[in-house]
Amino acid sequence: MPKLFCLASLMVAITAMPVMAADKPAAIKLCTENEDSFPWLLKSRPGLSIIMMQMVEKRLGIKLDIQPLPWKRCMEDVKQGNLDGLFKISFKADRMDMGHYPMAGDKPDNSKRMLDDSYSLYRLKGGTVEWDGKTIKHADAGIGAQSGFSIVDQLKGMGVKVDDGTRVADDNLRKVLTGRVAAVALQTQEGDASIADRPEFAGKIERVGPALAEKPYFLMLSKPFVAKYGDTAKQVWDAVAAVRESPEYKKQMQQFK
Image 1 (cartoon, rainbow, N blue to C red):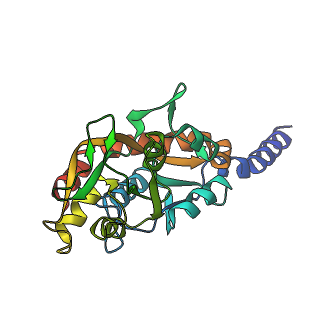
Image 2: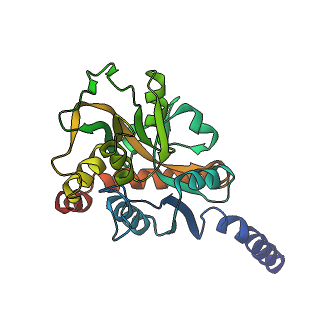
């Protein structure tokens, strides 16, 4: 009987092994946009978001396979379950059809955010476009915005004509120089960096205050991934929060140029 019992126990353990392995994926396939978004994403070197994901990977002990893709394709691949998640993405209720944010009740859990960023309006220096925190005025030529970004819906909600045919920040700023649009809405750090780094914009384009919007940005995980690896999903979001507040990452942020 003891031998039979041991054999039965061994068979149960062997049968359970594949189930145990499925509790934690060997790798998590993520995508992010394939254009510069200073300081978070850069084509020439790791931006702060990639640095954060490298730290998250080390903390979790799970490989993060990150693919840079056009933003709209990245979102569609996550929605279809072809990829396990994406970053960095702000919260919109209609994006919950695409995947899962870290949630606290019926709202996104800001404590699990990757970062905070803002959008600002940029016009020709001395231009007439105005933004008082409620209304955009003197923008008959329309406002440029980056395709696929959440600010597009906000601008349209203000009744402003929007040109969102271009993703690249520099190309949007060139629309201002040529008079194609009255101003452009860009993520503030990216817009400021473009103006500082490009002689063609220096002294010609200025930022209009206050910020159009200030938002937290998250790592979104796909619905199939969360359904299969719910515990791992929580560990990933917890690791993002821990890395964001870690001295090592804060040092990277302070030193990043």
